Length: 82
Image 1 (cartoon, rainbow, N blue to C red):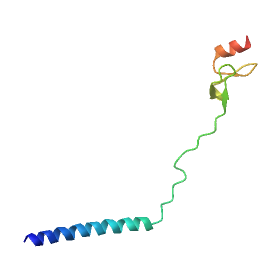
Image 2 (cartoon, rainbow, N blue to C red):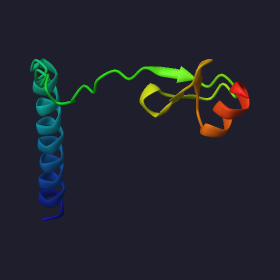
Image 3 (cartoon, one colour):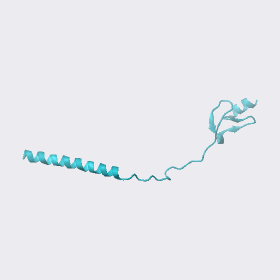
């Protein structure tokens, strides 16, 4: 009886090992799935400018435009333009 149990466990282990090996080989042979091109939305490009006083980079839409350049805040605009 003891040998029958050992034989059964050995067969089960070998069967599981072969099954796992066979499935990994078929996964490697299968061509990769094509990726969907519309997965990520492309955002419009934003122009980045630097403040003339402190050189902080910020989007042009948020920048303050003065007579002598671009500024990050009203205080820097007033400081540069007098």
